[in-house]
Image (cartoon, rainbow, N blue to C red; front, side, top):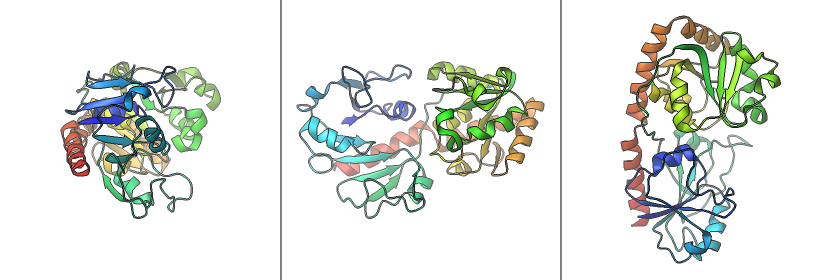
Length: 320
């Protein structure tokens, strides 16, 4: 199939484009949010093809994967065809709802011309999609391989814009965990985080790395810390598990299903989580064993083969 989708979520798209199709990604001269084109920091195959808007109108397209509310109108303008009416379409919802939870209405609610695809059962449960058909296709991850060494007695955290996002990402909880041991925080706009939290630089180091470098650096840390209060299931958490890292996480949203017993510690009591961080930092053998189980659990639930097969089944159904 020829599948049109925007480059919105690099990590998710990296898994999606491993399938047997041609993936058409809009590109604009300024490479802005509606025309990022191919990823620069992710490894995408040659079947991902950049197309400027003016070339889309005459291109054969079998399916449109919408990911943001305004993309339906954008696609109609660029294609001269309406997703869901003139072209088969699905709406991929990456995020958990914000606002009047649990009564948050989805922007695609009460539509009979498309399917809303959620990435977690939690999101499907909490979004109000009205009469719109919904389904769940859980994440898939391109296996980076087992790389864990845990040689650095520090907690690895991956979060984008932790200062701006604040309580949502559990940024306010980081000083508690920094008292147990050093934090190494990776992600976009993490600079200045230590100063923002009043932490000495050696207790809160930050860096922004491309995915390949991140997969090398993460497993050098003893554990993966996931202090996020409210989010969809972060792919960085699943990648850390694939790498063989034990997990310490808040028992919120989909984390309670993604991190089974024996692969780490989940709790809504941050004191228990602080104890778990301290335990792993002091006991490398325990961290290694739980990390091995975390990798096995992630491979079984979030393997790429299952993910692509689920998507192929849905695509065949909606384009039939």
